[in-house]
Image 1: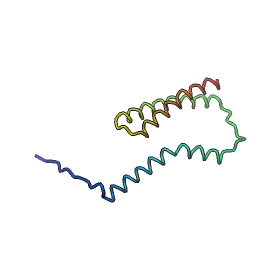
Image 2 (image 1 turned 30 degrees about the vertical axis):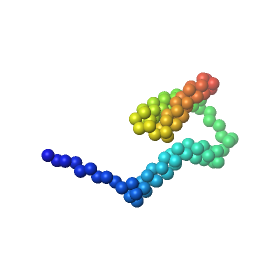
Image 3 (image 1 turned 90 degrees about the vertical axis):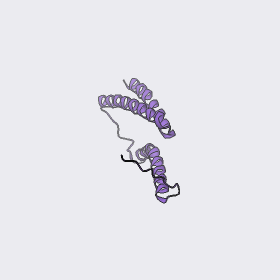
Length: 109
């Protein structure tokens, strides 16, 4: 019968520290990504351009509501599973996006 060998990793191992630091930087970058996208739009978008295709806009809002609701439920399940605060913040943010999208759709109709 085969027996599994348990390998204990030393917490001071440089590879382990490097991977933990990489994960931390990656989580911060992903959390800041929406703010960076908004900054890009504010810096490079021409304010004189207007979107005129209203049906496409309403379809986009409907898809946004559906996808954000699904992503919020998925993020909440992941948060329940492992307890990471970033997942909770993401779930709450996405859950707040759905009713705002519904209100937006009602206002533009």
